[in-house]
Each structure stands twice: as C-alpha cells, then as structure tokens.
Length: 319
Picture 1 (cartoon, helix red, strand yellow):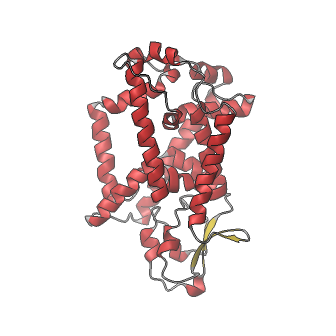
Picture 2 (tube, helix red, strand yellow):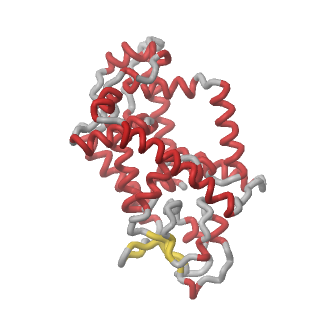
Picture 3 (cartoon, one colour):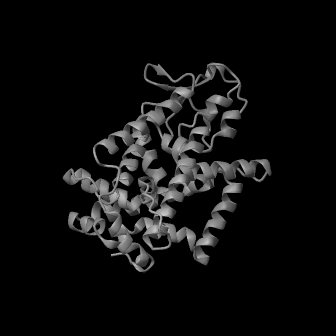
C-alpha cells in the first residue's frame, strides 16, 4: 500500500500544480507554474481515442500525450503483472482501500453473496463494451481526430478541475453514495463500476504472473479469502486466473503457512514480495523516461493557447 500511497501523493502534488497553472491561465495569478503532464492520467476517454489513432496511424497524441503514455503503461502492467495498476498505482484504488479500512474498523464491511456479486461484476464489463462500441466501432479516424483536436478536448483537464472545484448537487450526491457503499462493500467502485478495471482484467487473463496455492500445505484458515480486495475465494483454487485479481499479493502476505501461497510466473517465484513492487515502479519509470526523451510526455499545446481557452472552459460543450 506504500507504493500506491506514493503514487497518490504524486497525483495530489500534480493536481495542486495544475490548479496553480489554471489560476495563471485564467488571469487570477501572475505567477506562472508549468502545467504538470500527469493530470492527463485523469482523461481516460481522450487516452482511449489516442490509442486507437496510434494503432491505426502510428501517430502519438500531441494534445494529451502523457494520458496515452499512462494508458499504455496500465495495459502493459495488466499483460505482464496482472492488474498491478489497480493494486499498486491507481489513486482511486488507494482511496477505496482507505475507505475499506475505515469500514472494517467500524465493523461495517459486508461480504456480497455470490448470487449478487457476479451480476454486479458484469456492470463494468457492460460499460467497457459501451465505450468500446462507440470508440472502436462507431468512430472513424476523421471523427477521432476531430475530437482530439477540438477545443473541448484541449480544455478537458480544466473542465475536470472545474468539475471538482464546483461540483453540482448531483455530483456530490453520487460521490456520497459511492463513499457510503465503499464503507460497506470493499472497493465497490473498482470491483463493479470501473470500465478501466474491466479492460485491465481482460488483459490480465493472459498475464504469466499468478497467485498459486499449494493445497497440501493449506490449513483452510480462510485468511486469504477474507483479505482479498476482489473477494476471490483463494482457498478454493490452485491457481488464481481470475480477471479480478489485482496482483496486490495481500493473500500471500497474510498466509500463516510458509510456501502455501506464492506469486509466480513460469519458472520464476516472486520472493520477497518487494521485488514485485520494484517491478511495478520500474516499469512505470521506463514508460515515463522513454516518453520524456521521445517527446511523448509534455503537450505540444503552448501555454498561451491554454491561457486563451481556459477562461471559457466551463462553457465549452462536447463536439
């Protein structure tokens, strides 16, 4: 959780720096602060459109390049390290874990019955299917480029900031409901509603990394089942291939029997577990450094353009 907390801190710092940049851009501050590229990680639709254009044309998104880099990093973690992005990087996942800890401390946590859990799990896959249909099937290259170069997409980061600074009553109500549900049902948003989690879960199905259980050493204490943030019945499986497994390795850490549970890839056991954390961080550093040195991290939009567009960002509508 320390690694996830560190990434969350980076997001908070980036958010504060972006706020300062926004204040300069709208004329409320005379102090110029550079626009942090990391805020583009919160623009998933733009990143998905940029990914489709990259695959079809080989062109990188110049407007929000860091968003595309972060998406590719997330997909790479799924393919190589299961849903490690969800378990070790995502700031929303970090917030969900904090709420889950609070709910557990207050003895509010409920375990969803299997007959209800599986239908709810389908919700995020339905959302993923909807976005995939719109982006992958319906939108041609002309429509994608029109969106990517639109004023709406250019100021999407500012609109996101305004969304949180000036939330509508409905927004506050929805967030309040999600917070309450997360106190009772661990990682409610991540488990049932996050379409990105669904995408990464599908990628994780072919990941070589898996939690494996030695049935001969298992004492059926149930600690692994209880601690699993995805509510996977670890104690009833030999190898965890479930798309909801986020590679957090909490089950491995809590297991009281040595060599009963392990995090493994073919011919490779991940032990001690901090090696896995280093792998996640190392993979991110590789993507980040490569993006910086190849010009795929910082936007090509000059600050003066943002300064001309941000004052009216709240009124810009979807193209």
